[in-house]
Length: 520
Image (cartoon, rainbow, N blue to C red; front, side):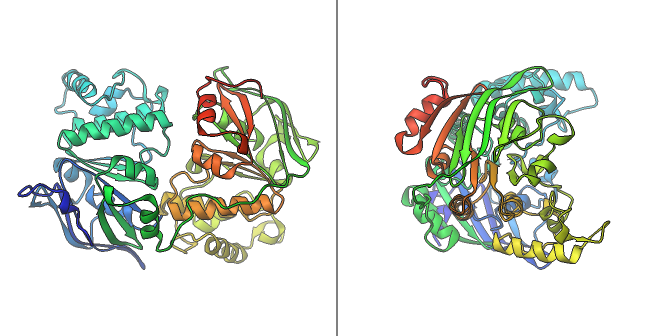
């Protein structure tokens, strides 16, 4: 295996050196004999399938877990990291996939939280404000220190997380799936920030499933598979195809191989659909669209332009006005007849954008989550009042096996699965119920390259079986690869609709920015 030390100047100790790291959770071996060396002043990528052990390894480095065996060296010194406080003292910061911020605190209060430097808060805030201003300017992390976190965009919240780490004098920064919720413009800005940090001599570890990002921003990249480190190479010496093959152990199709669609009858039709939020702000404005059997309609757009509200309205999760017709039947948009249970009875399967908030109960077992929304089906009941848990567990095991959920343990709590395997649980539950209409938001968010190929093929298989599919994704490549038609949303409205063979990334990008296009 080619070693990351190849990027280290002669005589300079590695910023991080892991030797023989092992970690198991009961029968599951998450990390096995992992050794890795990362130089200071570099951006190092770590890739692998969901469940490969990436997040476990970084959790050991940051003190969330303690290794069963092995040692950690920071700048050449053997370092014990029993908890996150020890990691911070060692100069390690981590930006998690799901941010660790107090939403009703200001930026300044979040940055200072846990690092107040004395019993009096006022002097700590004053000192922090000055340092925060300097760090913001130095690293292009501009953010209002007095802004309330819940009022900030996701991209700005991520900047706050990076500022928190820099405020604590981190010179090793771990980022876990940092662009999963960012717009393309925000992702480009983040990469510029990472390069600035690298040029200042800091060590950046980037965990991501997006291989083009690895190629764009890293200096070296390590590949993990089934809990082991299988390769470390210079980024300039590899490619997306090579990395994908190393991750999965076989050749991976990076684009979907699908035939021409054969649309049938209209399954979903919306007419002048509108949603107004709790603050009386219009989020969806007169959206009219239709989806036929045997076709995929992709909804493109920068996050926050009404896509979330569109899925929620169709799925019965938010009140709306206008009209929705399912298989020619007009359905209620408010009141007792408008909830998701009624939608399911009409043959709608729904994969929400946010799996944690709207698709899973994180403290439930996998088998319990696998039956959510379908638990009243007669095949899962024993008499009028009781669920047949044996049947549900058996059914869940088969669905988990079919979707390659790892570990294949239905008794595992949902929170214990990696993000990609959590997503597979949701997809297995919704895809395999023979729906007439599938509405799916961000189907591959936080999912590895092998699973992306699998999920994309399952979506196409549903289309070919006559299911109408409404797909929302912020990944333009995903829309171009899967959709038969694409509608672009901007500021709550559809501003353009195209047949996928008659458009390209440039035209859709302009529409997404609201620069070009006409009425849908």
